[in-house]
Length: 564
Image (cartoon, rainbow, N blue to C red; front, top):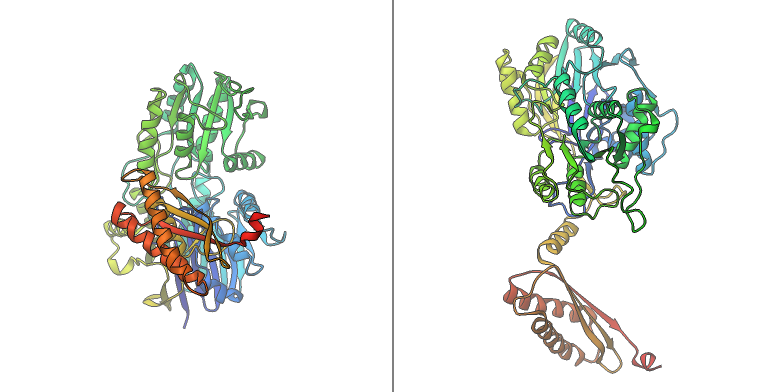
């Protein structure tokens, strides 16, 4: 009896944090290990990564990590798994170069033999299991799908893909690979689902180039383009046109600068070095150095970052670029889920400075994910027994089910999983969800792989919504008197009756509580602080209907030392 388990540790019923484990007998094959970026209500959280408990507990069974592309949602969590044990990582040259920079940011240096480059012709053997790679079209170079050959057929992971004919991959080789997999038999297709609701066709590269050429040639002032850092193809097109028009190019965004250097080194970008400009920080001596009319500025980042930087530029608080009325701003970033409000707000702020704002519909700026027809094409070519929607929220997974229904797949052949579900196949047939594994999110603040606790997140939410009151006083335990204070500092809320009256009431509460606690033979500092917090909280809520964080700082002080 042969048994195969599919486990989504992250990446289903969510957008990001892709991490899938394929268990064949006692071997575990890890497909991608990514992160996702927090939404606005997660105050102070830098990134969100997967709970790796299951893989850590079974680390000796992990054969290797196989990476499909260089996006953060596919490689951003690799360092946390490599810190547990030396594991081989297989990926394309470009993906590995980007990964090295990512690992350096996470302050982790892998052994030189841990990172193994592969091509579309690579075949890796692990006993009776063979892992192959096949080219896919994506908006970042050297993206691969991954095929795991088992005795019951292939398990195919498409990762992010499309059939964009404007890309420069070898489609003939890709289709030959897919035909071979189909002929030998595909047990399950792990197909991305983010674009399953998208019906429109892709814009042509010719139209995009024509529109960008007209914009760049006709602009009187600087051109400011917003781009996502991973969109290497679009960056190349803008740079090509800018060079042809005699413009100089400045890239804002450290991550994109690294990506561009890597792409140039590996031959995916071709831009003369003398066309790049290093912008200087704006100061009293350098307030006009970055305002040359021949500049094409690429403002880049992930998700919300291009919008955030454009807002800073519009408000003239950016260190490199301050928007002027004769600048032209070109928005080439379709909002990600959760960033729509920020994108709309950014446009409104920009229009206060310049009306030369160009936006484009989704037909000209297509999503890099496969649309409905491309998903149908992938399923029809491979003819899998089962389809597992991955890389997407539940509505995307459900939309992929509808797409598969349209080409003859019944619901029992379309397996929608949740994070942590174990989908089992026994002797080539689906046996249902046979268990679950530990999964979840680790909220990271800084570089340490440590979850930000619920208590900390609640405190941050209170700080953001209701503010803070800090009350400081020096207390003499010998004389049982208040030596200095109280000093009151408030942050994050407005006063109903004016700050003087509010502070006077807080001091009155402090005096009353202090009289009660200093009358005892010994001062119980814990009770003293607790009573002070409770009394102030009660008053503030009654008067302002707010629940700020109350921080009493009571300092035990020797009065004689103050006199000296």
